[in-house]
Structures are given as C-alpha cells and as structure tokens.
Amino acid sequence: MLQFASRDSSGESEIAKAESMSRRNHLHDEMGWRAVGMMQAGARQSAVARELNVRRSVIHRLWNHCQSDENASRRRGSGRRRITTTADDRYLLQCARRRRTLTAQHLASKLSAAAGRPISRQTVPRRLHEGGLFA
Image 1 (spheres, rainbow, N blue to C red):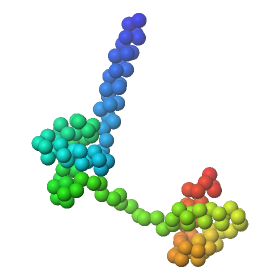
Image 2 (image 1 turned 30 degrees about the vertical axis):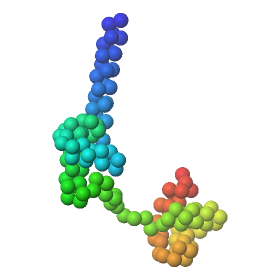
Image 3 (image 1 turned 90 degrees about the vertical axis):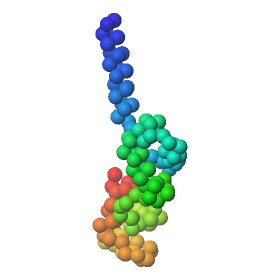
C-alpha cells in the first residue's frame, strides 16, 4: 500500500513537471492581442506570461514588436518558397504514374512546358516522394 501511495505522489510531481515544461514559445494572433491588452492595462510581463502559459521572453518580444510596429500579429515565416504548386505536383504524379519509364529530366521538361516556368530535374524526385510514389 505504501508503494502505491509513493507512486501517486511521484505521478503528481511528473504532471507538474510536464505542465511547466509545456510552455509555448509563441502566441497565436488572438492570444497576442489579449496579451497586449493586458500589458496596456498595466499588468506585468511575468503575470501575463503566467496567465497565458508562455515564457516571459515571448511576452517581452511581443511587447517590443507591438511598441515598434503597433501590431501584435506574427510575422510571416521565413524560408524558400516552393517552385511548384499543388496542382503542379498532382500533374507530375499523374504523368509519372501513366508512363513509369519517363526519367526525371523528361518529367521536368513536361512540367516546365505545362507550367510555363523552369522546373529543376532535382525537384521531380522530391515531389514524387512527397506524393507517395516512392513510399
């Protein structure tokens, strides 16, 4: 019986650890505006962070961003934009399934002709793998 009691108490501490570790590193737009409203009402950054279950650094960055840009919305993510659209990817999969003997270079040239913009030969296997052809 004592073993079970000790397991329960350790289980509770594990839950507490999991809750404290599950703090988010960013806020969605609605929560961001809510945080800005709380800050404008005079709340401290640490209190806002506790209320919204995020790190204080998140609130700090949000507040600085809001003061400089007067906007609490998240910025668009960085990264390279995709060359092909979802329609292009479907077309590529369709061509590859119809004629399985076509090489990546032939598929790239077919897609380039259909899309009207150059597509790299290396892009073709990536799209076919994403589409599940090589899965």
